[in-house]
Image (cartoon, rainbow over all chains, first blue to last red; front, side, top):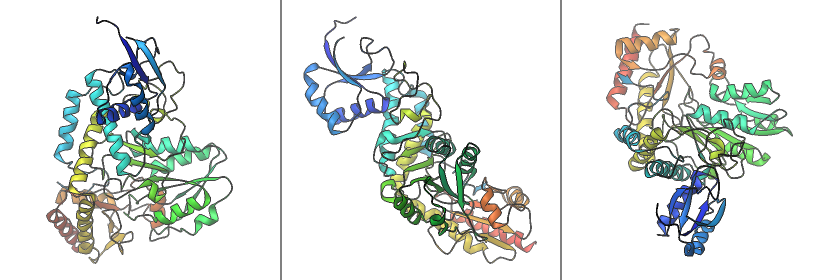
Length: 78
Length: 379
């Protein structure tokens, strides 16, 4: 397994919201990708946006700008 | 076979539709189930379609485009999830059983119903709207166009009424979605129910409902969603709230290809083509001896349907004759529209419905005219 590093994790209540995140981030060439939600955040299934922690501000701006419904924002060692 | 039963389902589909379904079957995983590339490919395709449909129907938000198997499922979700005992709902005599049966089931549990009546020519009594409204009236549920006659409802009049009284407007667009311009916000529609396999030119097993801002619909089915797995109830957020279980991703890939076809060809051009064919047929048969055409053909603003009878011939017999002798596919009988058949006086005889898609031709239409001419002479 690869070495764990701190990551910014954004979770969503629906797959549709996650796909909106990916679409708008790709459109603006923002960093990150969709990954399975780590168990340290939730034991449920689903996908989340994982990105470098330093990208938090611009990712939050994208969330606000496009009214993307999120469940939470976390810093996680994964 | 000359296929003139497109109001039941359009056939053939644009070639790209089948190709997209086949590709998705080979390449897509299950949307929302996992974060591997195959699952994400499905999720991306479906999300992209939600966005495009939100734009196409003037719905506003991609997450408020909910996918179902067909219009019937969409209407069941809307009707059962919006109304309950003590509510009053207004509908019309034009409705298909996909609206009527969910409403009748609610009535058994205490929902009150009124129906705008249709006269012997199928015209609706819009003036009754104001007479029907009462303090517990919640909504008008109506189709955009009759699946029997092809007549189009005066939606601007109905939406003016619902807006004036603060009511919801739920529209069954089974016969118009795809070929008619529909903009929910501009037309005052709160919930739009559509099927993918008719005017949208997509595969059977696709459809949905677009839910306007502020409209809260209780879940119909509950179950797997791929998210929030440890919740004991269905997630509240749209579209997941109304989408339990695996979506028909393969079919939706086909629907996306169909939508692309409509946008490339031009909705207006496609509708003009099918409307012209229906009009050509109407003009060719309306004055033949024994032919009785139903519906309002004084306007071109209608679905591409010509509903007729020939003398007193049982519609089933006439449709079978057209099929066996002339290789023309039509739909006889009651068309799941019992109230309108009662109004038209055709409960016993039924009606033979001819219906076009943009992929039909003048030659096919002329052969159908000729068939009716021959049968008319044989009366």
